[in-house]
Image 1 (cartoon, rainbow, N blue to C red):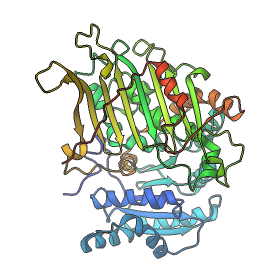
Image 2 (cartoon, one colour; image 1 turned 90 degrees about the vertical axis):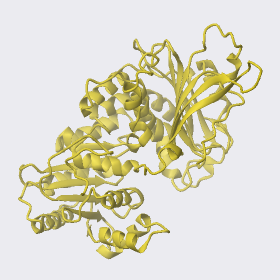
Image 3 (spheres, rainbow, N blue to C red; image 1 turned 45 degrees about the vertical axis):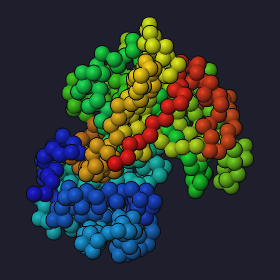
Image 4 (cartoon, rainbow, N blue to C red; image 1 turned 45 degrees about the horizontal axis):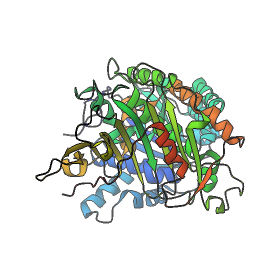
Length: 506
C-alpha cells in the first residue's frame, strides 16, 4: 500500500485532504541548492512512495537555456548512488521523467505565463478540475529575487479558483540582514500571499534530533521537574565546522557567522529547549510558545560576547582585506522569566575549527553535600548530538569497578546508529517538503517569530557592521579564540577533564 498524504506516518501527524494533482515547481532549478538538496529530497519522497507518478509532476524553472534532458542529466548525479542497483537506476530514470524544464527570467511575465501554461497542461492531462490542483513553488534562489518572483507567481501562476486546491511558496534563509530588511521582505510577501501560504524553511527544524526535543521534554516525566533554573546551571547550543568559507567567501563576508548560523538555526533550537509546554501540537500553539521565549530574551551585552576571525580568512580574493566579519562567535543569551532567570544560554558557532559537530549540552548544578569528593570529575550533563552520528547521552558519576569506593564519569547512551540499525533517518529537506505538501507549518518560521529573532540580534549586528565590536584572530584547526573559553568559565560552565564520549560500535 502506498503511503498516503492523508494519513499519519513517521514524518508527521498532520493530515490534509487530497484534491487535484500536485505540481512542484523548483525555481532556480539550475543552481547548487536545487541540485544538491531540493531534487534529491523530492527523489527520496518519490522512492518511498510519498510522491506518486500518477499524481505529481515536477517543473524546473531558471534563466539557463537547456532542454528537459539536460536538466535531468544534471540532477541524476546527485540522486543516484555509486552502488545503485539496476532496479534502483530504473527507479531514478522514472523519477527524472517526471521533471520538465521551463526557461525564463525571474521578473518576466512572459516566462511565468509559459510556466503556468505547462502546469495547466499537466493538470488537464490528469483530469483535474480547475482550482482544485495543488501548486508548490520552491524558491531555491537568492533572497534578493524573492519579491519579483513571488509577484510573478501571484499574478501569473495561482490557482484560478478555490475548489479545495492551494498554492504554497517555500523560501530559504536568509530572511533579510537585519530587522528593517526582514520586515521589508515580510511586508512585500505579505501583500502577495497569506501567512498560511508562506513556508520559511529552516532545515535545522527538520533534523531528527531537533524534532525529538518536544517529545523528550514533554513526554518524559523524568525531565519535567529538572528542566528549570533550580537544577540547570547552563545550556550550550553549539555548531562547529572544520571547513572555512572556501568557495563562498564573498557570500559569507556579507553575512557572517551570526546571521548565517546563530540568528536562525541555533535560535530555533534554543526556542525548543527553553519554551513552555504548548496546549497542543497544533503548529500555531507551538509557535506561540516559541514567541514567548524570544520576547523574554534580554539585550545582548558586549561583555558576554566573543567574536573571532580565523587566520587566512581575508586571503580569499572575494573577501575585503579589512573585513570585520566574524567567522566565530560565542555569546550568552539570558531569558527573563520564572523558569530560566539566571541560567546562561551559551550560543557558539564557528568555522575552521578542530572538529565538526552540532549539539545541545545541558549542564546540571553540583550535587549539594559532595560526600564522594567527586566534584572535580565534572557535573551531570545531558547531551543531544544533532550531527554527525546522532545520539543522546547522559553523563553520570558512577562507582569505578573494583574493590575501592572510587568514582568515575560514564554515560547512559542512546546512539541512533546502534539502537535503530534498520532505520533510515530522513534528510531534513525531504521531511520539510512533505510537511509543506500536507500544510503543516509547525517546523517553519512564522512572521512574528522572524521579527522577534531579528529584534534580539540587530543591535549587536549593527555594532559589528560599524566596527564597534571586532573579532579576535584565531588559528585554523583550533577550538577558536581563547577568550571564548574564558567567557564560558565566567558563565559558570564546568568542563569535564579526562572524559571523552566515544560513540559505541556495533
